[in-house]
Amino acid sequence: MEQTPKTLTGWVRFLSHAEIPVLKQTARDLSRLREEAERHDAREVAGIVTRDPLMTIKLLRYMQGHKRLSQMQELVQVEQAIMMMGFNTFFNEISTELVVETVLEKHMNALVHLMQTVRRAQRSADFAFDWAVRLRDLHWEEVRISTLLTYVSEMLMWCFNPEPMLEIRKRQNADKTLRSADVQKEVLGFVGLELQRALTIEWKLPELLKTLMDPKQAANPRVRNVLLAVNLARHSQHGWHDAALPDDFKQIGELLRMEPLHVMEIVGAPAIEPPQIP
Image (cartoon, rainbow, N blue to C red; front, side, top):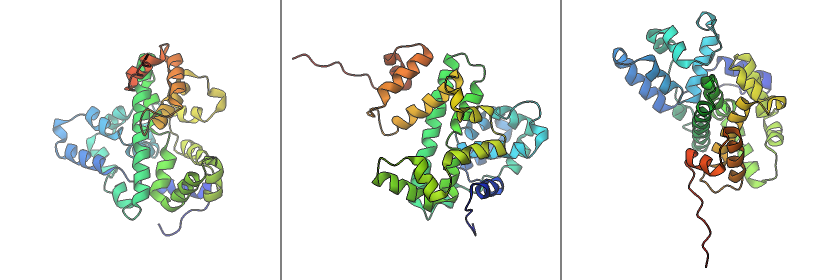
């Protein structure tokens, strides 16, 4: 990149035309399926796509540039989109040659942070999907994809703007009292949430992504599902010892109408040992 954008508008314009990299594992898996396309179906391809937030956003952005593929409904059904496109169009038009491991080969610390963010997004999406099914939410695919893309602006900035992102992380580690929004504003000139909102609008991403950023929608069950899934994945990223987790289990229990201990069981948290009586 010859010149790094300096404004929010500049970044939206840049990212709207940039070749978005994908995970190396995604590129490998799709290459394998491409060679044996006649033995696989759209569901298998979609399963690979939706494990990679960057590949997912790459596909959705492409679809928005080809309206005839998305006139019937909102762009959240990845499997259906692949079926509509056909394997030839999908594999020929959505390139997987550029991978994040190459893009960030000179910024290994940034790559580590990016991969942590990807893993957090994957776990968040898994939680949200499971809870949507339990709640009999007919829009479970929108819930899953929206949760997967919650961190997409952060991921893109790790890919294309690693040094300032590392500076933000350095300042936050040095002073735990700093608010993320304040540090982002100081280093980037804008807040990450502003970029997320702008990309959601510009690329016409799932409506739920816009709803998530509206404080008035905090009580919406679908919004609560996503936000609680994101919180749980973040708080449990390094284990099940974070002080915020008991509140997470309680709030998830209220959403799913189950006891916190049952919530712990379904999310894979270890059972709490009862106190030993001397």
